[in-house]
Structure formats: structure tokens, C-alpha cells
Amino acid sequence: MNKMKLLTKAPRGTQDTLPSESHKWQFIENLALDTARLYGFREIRVPTFEHTELFKRSVGDTTDVVQKEMFTFEDRGGRSLSLRPEGTAGTVRAALENGLLGDALPVKLSYVVSCFRNERPQAGRFKEFHQFGVEMFGAAAPGADAEVIGVANDIFEQLGIQNLELQINSIGCPECRAKYQQALKDYFSAHLGTLCGTCEERLEKNPMRLLDCKVPECAEIAKDAPVILDYICNDCRKHFELTKVNLQAMGIAFVVNPRIVRGLDYYTRTVFEFVSNDLGAQSTVCGGGRYDGLVETLGGKPTPALGFAMGLERLLMILDKQGIELPSPQSCDLYIASIGEEAALKAAQLTSLLRKEGFFVEFDTVGRSLKAQMKYADKLGAKLSMVIGDDEVSSCKAKLKDMGDGETKEVEFKDLPEAVYQKHLKDLADEVTDEEIQF
Ligand code: HAM
Image 1 (cartoon, rainbow, N blue to C red):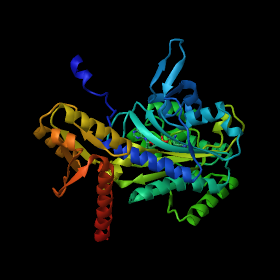
Image 2: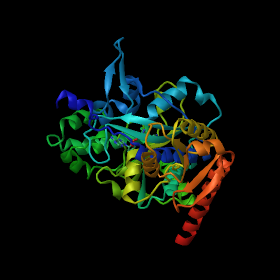
Image 3: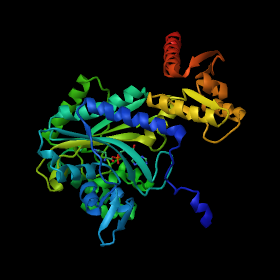
Image 4: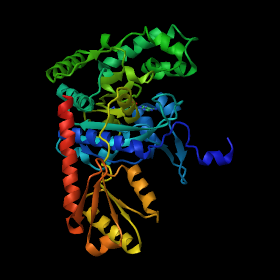
């Protein structure tokens, strides 16, 4: 690509969020954080990059994410750093470093993060993407699994998303997993020669990772591999059964999918995914589960933990596909046009006053003709407009025009905030009436 073109082209797999879309992001992020707050989750913000070792230890150094997808670089001191490929590792690190897990348990944290994975971009798959997630520490009971799943479910329900399927599974604990790993080794060993190089390498060290290899030949073989549910121990089975009972008690529909293993190494016991038909190949909008061993792996005391993350780009894709509109931002309440220098100053003064009252007001900062100012007011979708000239400046009043029905009325400048507020109330009342009519 020629060098000049690079200046106006974002890197592949990244996206700009334009003003016409950003309100959707704000709405979703606020809704997610507010919903989680009702369950006791409080927001944490962690760095965009961490020591590479953190991801190797937590996500796992034989996972695709760590082996193939991380953006890794050295700082000037030769330390290896990586852009976060996900939010859990950094959150656990921060919780440990800042002593959060010494507080009364459970500790519940939520976050909105950008993540980076050097994957081949396709619909719903980006190199930079965003997650909303929650992590809960210190809760071992199956009720916690249902509660965490409940947060995600609640968010999807509030957004009015249809046709999402919650799939759950248990991938057991390190004890029961040993038997399963042996069964996988036996199964996949019979296919040596057909498996990709990475799978052959991983077979000894981490056979479960062969189950989420994206190479078509490996995926075909993995379809008939043994499933973990046939191997889990009694304690894990009991935990899984009670998780299901809790979900039922909360009225959350689910299906058991014994083939979910998740692509990250830290999981134990319950794993789950919310899957949508509206996403094409990348059908998972939210994934999570328990990771009871991770806090200890990273140097903390043994602490049960669990969480999920939902991909915000994928969530927005579903909303678009399903025609779900999110509330659009407040539009311009009033445009104050002016003729002449003194009037322009008055317009600036009134604008400033009204903004302090919380109204969205614009005036001319370009030096346009009156005609051009009114055209701009139209483009802005201003609800009201007012033209100020010398006469209006000296009489301290002007005509306020309703841009919807064209009606005008004279308003003294001192009464302007009240007049704009009345228009605001009228619009709200009209909105409610419209909704009532629709029902
Ligand atoms: P994950 O399944 O790797 O889990 O990612 C969670 C979600 O992030 C996915 O379901 C998907 O919606 C979105 N996502 C992942 N990769 C991409 C991509 N390349 N482009 C667009 N969206 C993507 C985790 O990250 C775990 N940390 C979740 C978790 C939290 N488990 C316990 N706590």
C-alpha cells in the first residue's frame, strides 16, 4: 500500500466508532455496568498491557490466544509485554496486587475493556475488540455460577435480544480431568498424521486444546472425541447439577452442550456460552465460567472464582440484525441565530446561560449569513430556533419558533429557560402518547 494511503486507513481488524454509533456504545456499557451493580459488582479499570508472563500463566502457553494471537513487544529494558487479549488475567492480577481479596468475600468486579488478538479478521472477529465482563471471587457455591450467568442473561433480556441460547457444561477439576486427558490422548493418538502440527505438539502437554483447534481437519476429528461429562468426579457432578437447579430456580433457560471446553486454560467446573444465530460463524456473544485455581496460580491464596465476558461488537451486531433501536442522544433544543455583532454576542451569552441549565443549545460560531445559519439549525434537527438582531437586543425579547409545527411566540430573554423547558416537557408527553397509541 502506498505510504500516503496508510495515513487514512485504520489497521485491518480495527474499527472507528463514529458519533452516529457512539451513543449505542455508551448505552450498552452503562446498561451493563448498572445491571452488574445491582448484583454488587463494582467497576475496575486495569492497564491495556501486562507482563506477557501473566497471560502465559493464566490463559495458558499452549492456547491459540497465547501461542498465535497476542501482540507482544519488548519495553526498553527488554521486558516482554503484551496487549491484553482478554480481561480476566489483568483483573485477577490487580485484585491480588491491591489486596482486594482480603476484603469480605465475595468480591465482585466488573469492567469494560478493549482487547487485542491477532486473529484473521472476519465478520464478528476483530484484532481490537471490546468486552464487558464480570469476575467474582470467593464464592464456591453453585448459586454463584447461576448468579454470574444471571447478570449476562439480565443484560440480554433488558436489551430485548431474541433467540439467544445459553449453553452450559462442566469441565471438571484437575483431579477428574487427568482421566479425561488420558482418554483424549488415546483418541487423538489414533489420528496422528492428520492433525495439524500445533495439535501434534499440544497432544502430550494439553490435549484439551485439540478440541478447539480451528483447522478444519482437526475440528472434524474433534467432533467424535470423548466428552468430559462422562469423566467428571462426583463433587464436580454435584456442583453441575446444583448449578442447573439454581438456573431453573431463577427461570433461566439453558441447554447442556458437553462439547464446550472454552479456549482458555484457566477454567474449572462450570463453563458456559451464549450463542446467537445472528452472528454467522462467530456465534458466541458471551463466554465464561469458573476458574477456581487461577488466583493461586498467580500467587494468591486458594480462592474460588468465576466470571464471563461479552463481546460488545458482537452484541451490537445482534442488535442491528434484530432491528433493536437504542435510545438516541438528546437532540439540539434550541438554535440561536443572529444578525450583527452585538446580536452575536447576545446569542453567545444566552447560549452559555441555557447550557448551564442543562439544555443543548447552539449558536453561530462560523460567521454565516442568516439563511445559512437557519439551514444549519435544520440540519442539526434543532427543536426550537430564535433569530436575534439589533431590535431584539434592545427589547430583550425575540420570537421563538417551534421547528416542528412552525408556530412562533414572543419570549423575553429572561423567560427563555422556562420556554425551552416547556418544549422539552411537551415532547416528552408526545413521546408517551405515541407509545400508548402503538400499544
Ligand atoms: P472469550 O470467550 O475468549 O473469553 O471471549 C469472550 C467474548 O469476547 C467472546 O464470546 C466474543 O464475544 C468476544 N471476542 C473474543 N474474541 C473476539 C474477537 N477476535 N473479535 C471480536 N470479539 C471477540 C474471555 O475472554 C474470558 N476472559 C471470559 C471470562 C471472564 N471468563 C471468566 N471470566
